[in-house]
Length: 163
Image (cartoon, rainbow, N blue to C red; front, side):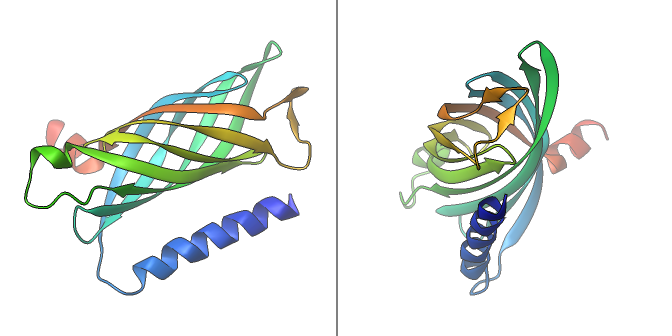
């Protein structure tokens, strides 16, 4: 658990140091998705999107992973940090996709990941998870292949939709 705290602290320092040099716009988003981590989980949470231009986008999020492990329902907290990159200039259609690099962590595993994001709203990413201090969820170790499929919905869109 001590190593997990150090990893989260280092990731936060790296991301916040990037934010200290420029004025960034912050947008709130709700996310829902599917996570495969030696087990299938549903994901519900929120993210903050930080951007100055649309070439590099930073996201920080927290969510809950919910699923059945060894025939028992389980909920795990999850934090994640992503960087979305697209350096094509003056081409609107090329900005429809971003390359995604990031890390996610729970109290059971830490997983670096890479992937693709469509408009920053629909993410498909994968990576490899490493167990935190041989932690298990209902007796099952959660290390190995990590696959994420996430839909990020801006809260401004939700507000306008129900207005």
